[in-house]
Image (cartoon, rainbow, N blue to C red; front, side, top):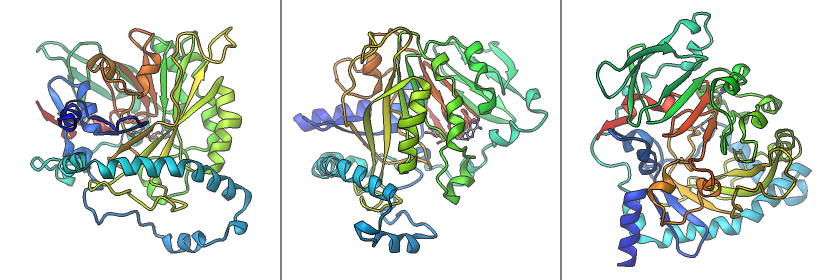
Length: 410
Ligand code: SAM
C-alpha cells in the first residue's frame, strides 16, 4: 500500500518522488493545474509529442552527426573534450535516475495514460495561434488592446496588450479576449509583453524585489527547427537583463535554463553570472522521457542529449559577502527532474508558487523551498511563454500557452 499511497499522491500533486534519491518524476499538467480554479490544463494539448513510441529525434543532418560521433577521443577539439567530460560526470546520475523510473512499474502503467483518452485537441485548433511576436513588431502595436473579463459580469477592462503590465489581481481565473481569441489568466498573476529592448520598463512598472527569478533565454543553437518557433539572440544580449534591479536587495535565487553547448556553459560561468552578480551554486537536470518511459534520444548522442541543465545561483544583494544570502536556504545539489516533454522548448513548471502551500508535508526540492523564508515569495519568469498564479511573466509572447484551447473547463 506504500506504493499506492505514492501513486495517489502523484495523481493529486503531479509529483512522484523516488525514495531516498534526488529524483522526481513530474506530470506538468497536474502541476500547472494548481494555478487555476475554474479551468484545467488540457493533457492532450500539453502532451502533443512523445506519446507515440516511434517518435524519435531525427534531424536533417543526422547522418553527418553520426559520422561525427565516431570520432575517437583525440580527434575531439578542446571544447568537445570539455563537453564530453561534463556529460561523463552527469551520466551515471542520469542512468541511475532513469533506472528508478524503469523499475517503478506502477508509475509506468499510469504514465501511458497521462495524455488521457478523450478531448484530444485537433492540431488545427492549436495552430490558430496569433503570433504575438509579429503583431508586437508593427507600428500599430501600441494600439492593440486586450479585454479582461473577471468572474463577475461587469468587471470588464480594456487595456493595451503590449508594453503594459496586464494584471489579474483577483483570486480567480480571468478570461481575456484578444483579436477574437480567448486567453485564461491565472489568479494573482500578471504579464508584461515586450521586446528585450523594453525590459527595463519592468523595473518601474512592477513591484520589484523578486526572490525567485527563472530565466529561459532564446539561446542560439543553430537549429533551423528552432528558428521557425521563435527568434533567438546572440549571448551578449542577455548581459543587459536587469537582474540586479529586479532581485530582492536581500538576495534572490536565480534559475537559468541552459542548452548543452559547451561554449554557452563557459559564457554563463565566466561572463553572464558575474555580470548579473550571481554565483553558481548547483546544477539540476531535466531528463526527458517518452510515455513508455524510454529516453527521448540516446543518452550519448552528442548533439541531442535527452536532458537539459538548469543552473541555480544566488544573487547576493547589497552589502552581503557571505556565501549564502541570509534569508535563502542552502540549495541541494544534482536534483533530477524527469518528465515527458510538451511542445518544442517548453520547460517543466518547476517553480509553481503554490507548491509549498498545497503540499507542506511533502519535501520536494523544486525551487520554492529555497525561498520559503520570504512569505509570500515573489517570483518572475523572464522569456516566459505562459503564466503562473502569483507570478509575473515577461517576454515577447507570455500568452502563448494561455490560449483557451489549451484548457478545459473544470
Ligand atoms: N520557458 C519557455 C517555455 O517553457 O515555454 C520557453 C522560452 S523560449 C526558450 C525563449 C522565448 O524568448 C521565446 O518565447 C521567444 O519568442 C522569446 N524571445 C526571443 N527574442 C526575444 C526578444 N528580443 N525579446 C523578448 N523575448 C524574446
